[in-house]
Length: 172
Image 1 (spheres, one colour):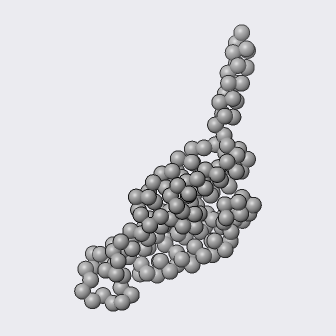
Image 2 (cartoon, rainbow, N blue to C red; image 1 turned 180 degrees about the vertical axis):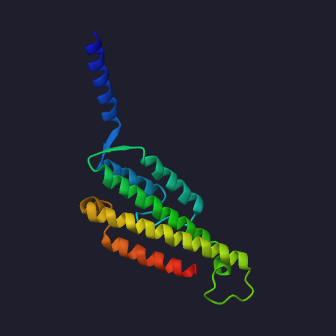
Image 3 (tube, rainbow, N blue to C red; image 1 turned 90 degrees about the vertical axis):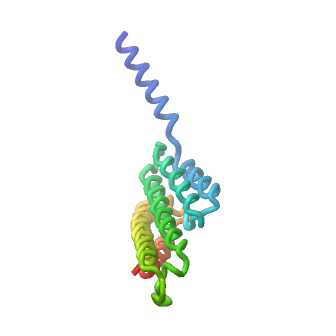
């Protein structure tokens, strides 16, 4: 009797865990849906911080999915997307200060706290951007086919790295 109960429990567990997993391609479809919902791509983000925050939340919820097959590639794709959105959020935050938060045209009569806060947000943006680039490089090197399905490549990493560098320079 105990043997039958054990076998039934094992079958039930397999059934339950099997139903909760998705394929890598189904995961890509979910990523694409979230990007479309927020009118963004893997390389862009909304101009509104609340919208970016909502996207980050949506992508963090995807991290709970079990992906059969290329689960590491899916995890790297999500990590890249979340980091790039966090970078974008800090950049949008810095941009909200407008010309008051930049010193490229001189200090003039600009309030120091605004300049410092904008600079800090730009530095945070650059740091998250560089972290995103590192994750993207891992994804592209280990899983080039999966990265390509997401529209990501070494060129994407190169462009994001250059952008992050420029943003970081503005924060100095």
